[in-house]
Length: 493
Figure 1 (cartoon, one colour):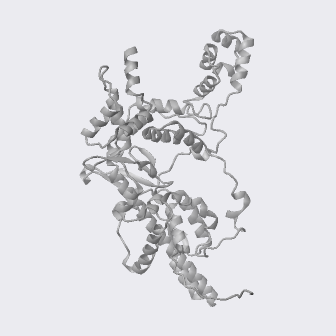
Figure 2 (cartoon, rainbow, N blue to C red):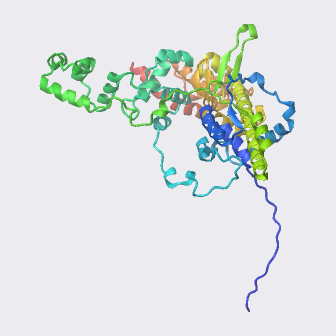
Figure 3 (cartoon, rainbow, N blue to C red):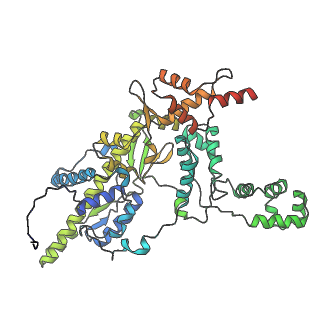
């Protein structure tokens, strides 16, 4: 029996999120920092004759501007806002957002459709080769592996961002400690760990310190080398006789020591891209309001780096008056729509960043007043629920953007940390709980060493709902030995 081919018609209901070109553009602008945004707008100005840079000094865009609208543009604003909020409905997790660099090649093709071919430079073979690892990434990987304490990691991340192009850390640690609200003794062990990272010599204070770290790593640092490093300037003057006398060696041995010094790397960071050690420029500024104005904080976008564009309506009207063909009129209409959309997208981006930054500042007020130990637990969902946006929107806003504060420049992601919920419903930052555990152990008496169970009971009485195993986890993360080992240490003193 031979088979028969039949045709049938079936209906199938399916939901699918369609990303319009305008919506893709809005998302691109949201996740760009101010410098990326400036480069993007330069491209748009080159391709759209109706766009131009604003020559006047841009006004401050601050949190006080939130909620202001233009009544004459209500329809356009409603259309834009509705599509902007649609992007929060994606099923993709917040951390899976593409980076702004993914859109650079297509920046000039606004409104040109969503298709892409392998002829596009983004899909070229050499564009997808493994990128050179940056120094910041290299050090951050080591930081994550070597430190379990979250506060230590945050301090370490800040120190990594302060390394200069040579690989040196020239900042005064007392000033940094004061800025973070911790003691220099709290910073010292973190820095000591960082100074053991690869490449050897990284986080040195100066050239002599850098060479010393490398000699220590090679187990060659002895008394003669210490003397040689202390009188390094005599090598340049070629006063080998005096130098040999100071080091307590003969001139032949001294020449070998100098040859050894010349094999060391005076700039440990030289093999990495210098871009990653450049000072971060804040996208958002946080300023203290005077007491005469009621005190508190003011939040505004950094207008020194925030580009502004305008639509040249006069030029549009003049060209339209001379446009004769349908193609010319359609071209001008398309360019005007694209220009209007960019202006609205920039305004919406500013409002969204300010909303997120304002909520972060309100939640982390204690940190700005008292220091890093007062960070409170905060998640993307917490901020998203408060400002009425999706977590993915908050994730895009906080990635790669920095805020200038009275305590320094921080990436917005810095302020997000997990925590514990107390018996009364109060949230406690994991970092603050760890600090309480450390303080209890530091204050324990020789004849009353606290067990993990006892520490848990004390914290529970203080309203922190924590289990013994969590205390043990935090204690181990801070490299604090068990109560039995601490008891033995006290007995042997």
